[in-house]
Image 1 (cartoon, one colour):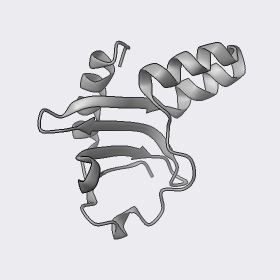
Image 2 (image 1 turned 90 degrees about the vertical axis):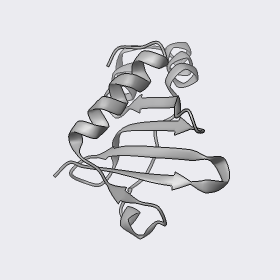
Image 3 (image 1 turned 90 degrees about the horizontal axis):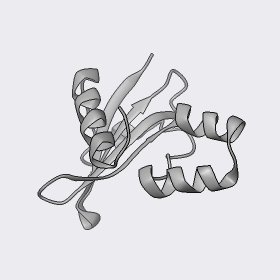
Length: 107
């Protein structure tokens, strides 16, 4: 079952928002920084897999520079992190669309 959650890294003033797939891996990830919640990342596993299978290394580098690098590994145990809270799919979709727009991509 897909789940959505956020966590906060106080020392970096960074909010991380995740959409986790049925196996607990990041399907999409958004990061926003600072009081103005400026998006600094909005990466998608679907995009990464498409680039891996259909594009070259330069295209992958361009994607990572523009949208960031998706978390690798299982997100299991996120509930135990300080500041971690489950969010709605609607909240994640809104943040995703805003971040992709700000970073110059389509939602």
